[in-house]
Length: 65
Image (cartoon, rainbow, N blue to C red; front, side, top):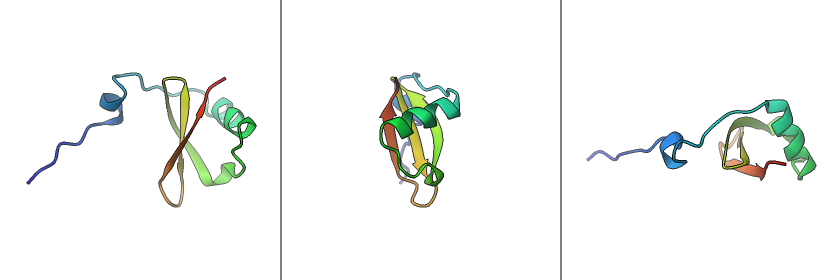
C-alpha cells in the first residue's frame, strides 16, 4: 500500500519562501530562542520563520516582526 505525501509547498498553498537567515535568527533570539546553535533555519511561510533541530529533527517557529 502506498501513501501520498504532500510537500511543504503544497501544504502551505504555495506560500513558502526563504528570507535572510541572519534576520530570521535575530528575530527568533529576540523572541526567546536560547540555543541557536542547535537549530537551522529552514523556510518561512505566512509570516512565520521555521527552524529544525539539528539533533531531533523537530520544528519550531517564530512570528516575523
